[in-house]
Image: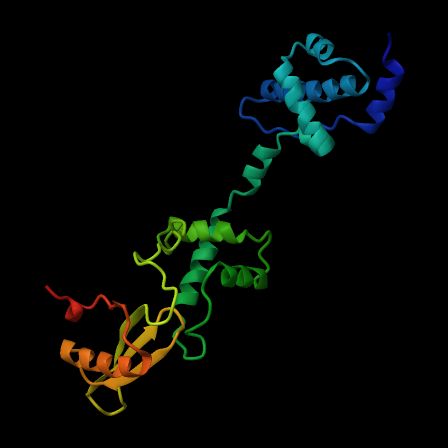
Length: 254
């Protein structure tokens, strides 16, 4: 079995382009990286030519896990997947010190605006990106990168992740099935009229079944005043079997 013609065709489709590798150890490290990249491309060429994973691993002296890792990367991203993309992305995301100082200076300028027309202007990451763009600074950092810079210097606080919303627990009373089975009493206030110190309260009594409401404006929330309101309310709505009070301490009884 020969693969020479097939390999020639695959080589034209999948050229071996090795990236430039900067290493402190010099040519030895660069040669090792070139051998690594060469083995990746050679393994893909052999697999496309029809050789099995066992044969490829035996020829290259690699493990099956190594081959399947780069085979998956090739199937997902093509030849670009054979490079160390994660490390490249991390290097690109490093922010230059002068850009970081520019971000802090812009934020300080935005916070110091005291003119009545600009004191309510935005000072967050989007406003900083807009000014960086206007100044011609390229490449522009991401919004999240600017937020991390501000947090690292103590200008802002990290995002708060709130706990999941809990479903409202049902009130420990059986729901009404007819009118005047359950009335709900509440007081709204205090409220004030303009120019006066007198407190006012709105007494509210509602039928929990049919929604009928009785309202009254009063000046006190004492218990005897509330009982007088209930007597007047029940004359129009009818007397309730159950009365659900507000949790105010005025309504607590021994």
